[in-house]
Image (cartoon, rainbow, N blue to C red; front, side):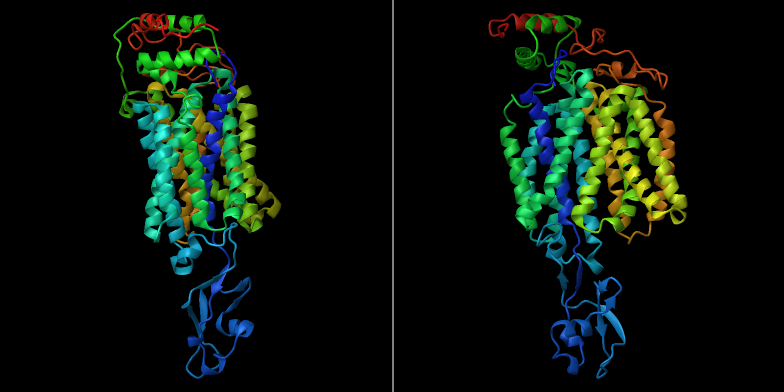
Length: 557
């Protein structure tokens, strides 16, 4: 994870990877909190005729609750005319529900706490949509904060905010308080995720960027796999929320140590914060490369007026290439996450239990992460993104047009392939965007791409609010978008083996190569490219020399 071509060091590698597991726990928490257990109405003796009110046990249940093909009716009770021992209709539950617990390993969750079933069932997708809205807003806000206040500061502030908000979720007294707290909790987690993603990427040289990011992805998957076990230990949703919050608090307390997560030296140099950049580079030089090598990198910078200079996300609108790349990759991330519901819907009948469905979805995510890790470095980001988008689109179109004519095994296979391919499209779009966006606006630009990803994820709960009546239209629209994304991806540049662009001019200079021609590699680049824009990094070399030769400079190893 260090600069100068050296391999990731254990301490800083752990600092960039381990938080992903804790953040994944916070992300996956919503799956357990909103899991709907099997349920039925509680019998209401007041609705029965007098001769049947003395019944008890199974006899009372048969007299009060209608029997359906799959079991007892979840939302209806028999209605009897006065004095008639035979029912003449059904009506809604009057005395609450009986739940078959545990659900997702919990004896109580949001559904059972506030009876979010039957007429109130729409509140569950509302809570899920609100939480995803928090992730979207948090990604955009944290991205702008990363470019103004730094990656490390944004990461620590987001974690610090997640702790009291997480406790607010655990102590919520009504459903409205849960909605507000879950929105803020999602925003805080999104800020920590985005800041960590950018900081980790900017501490890598070209050959290790993909590998380091994919290892972080496996840590994220490990955190998702830990959720069922933690739920079984906690048994109650408030205890589970509190446990995840305490893990985040421990993470925030530990990661204040600069040894675990340094501020990005690329961002410090790109924004001309010379003194902070000197200290960060000296810390890296002690671990990774001799001071002479560091001085040689700084010699590449030109003369000019010093002083911090920050860039706004609005400057993207004045560019041509950067704007195009950001829109295409944000659109691809939106499609990859939004179309996934079209595939997972076909898996639901085969995975009736929470644990089996959870493991299946996480398994497809792991397969996608492994596929990207093995192929994107060899064949290029653009080619693999194009391949995964084509697979996603073809699987979606086949399921849309031929589901009723295909064997169930083929439908299941296409659904699994489509789910894995859509995962790959999403993660590769985000990674690709982080490589082609320039350092000075990487946080804000990537925040918009990640935000588009969470908007796509919200398609699943949104279509569930009106009882899935819009699913077919949702499938048609996203299948069409997938075909459009295939054409758009052809316009992207290739970032494999290239240094990260630093300034807006660097980002605008990226060109689209032929699809199957590999670009020249730049394996061991200095922190900033030798052809850096003169007026962007002026007088930095002379200032850096003076600072490094000062009495408090670190000694050579």
